Length: 213
Image (cartoon, rainbow, N blue to C red; front, top):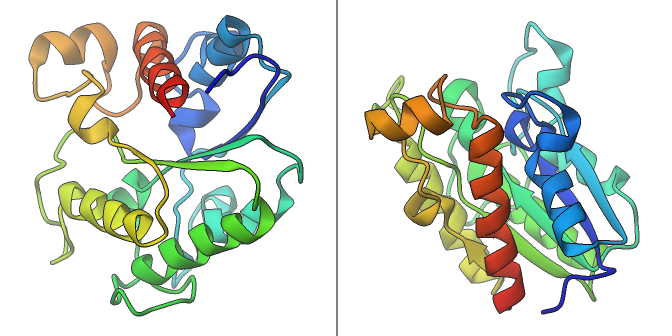
């Protein structure tokens, strides 16, 4: 797929918003916009947000602007919709995991279905791409009996496959695993948010994936 003059809506959390970079033009969405000569790169990243609706209120109200509750506010015209989330559902989410049969935003499984089905209905002619979370510090530790981040990644892939949506598995092939000390120090110094150099790698991975579709 040729990306020049395309409009991409990027829906995500703090990584999409650019936390960890030194300036707004260093985040991956802007790097992609410039390198691929996009018509627009609409960035809908909000730090701390999760895919599913939470059961309680967060200390920071912005964190409760879940993906399911805000995707309808994105620009209605887009050639590509890129969804990149899930790390906060693991890190500090409290929505029940639920089951694959759920279809409401009140569980993680249900939120995935609600989000993906909603995006398909809103953008029936667009290419909708789902990205899995990056590795992060402590990602293989189960918290309060909930799945590890790998478990959340697997659920994201399972539901995307159900809707036949292409998945960019950044968990497996981003090259940004914090499990390697040298990679962590060079690209993800806080063990969660890629820095400027990390966003260059993210941009290149996303461009390569999109151009191959």
